[in-house]
Length: 146
Image 1: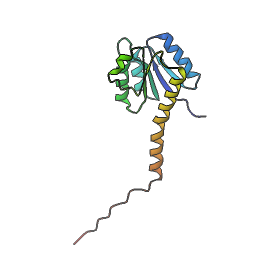
Image 2 (image 1 turned 135 degrees about the vertical axis):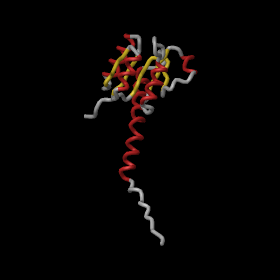
Image 3 (image 1 turned 90 degrees about the horizontal axis):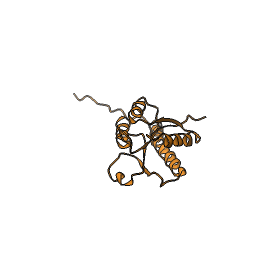
Image 4 (image 1 turned 180 degrees about the vertical axis):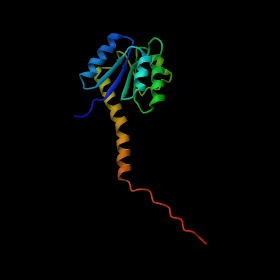
């Protein structure tokens, strides 16, 4: 049995957070749900998170700053930013994917998560496999000239 992928889900709206948590858990993901971005960053720093899914507009640290912190700690961790404020996305957020609330179906979100997790896992395995199969680099021999 393959290990579950862990998603850090952050939203200050408890109802939205609960709905996403149930949706993801029923699809086989382990979900770490936080309504406070600072606590979510502290948990992320402990490791073991495969993907971050966050709301943009939150009190204190917003989703864009949360993703900035996540990418500083682990640049390869994929991040999805959700917002009802589409115009805000015109600014750089650092998210791998932006989805406007109410403009996507749950199946779209699940497919985006699946693709980001495959992409995260894929190149590392391919590189490790290539390195394992590659012959060791040649050793340069120096000859002493007298």
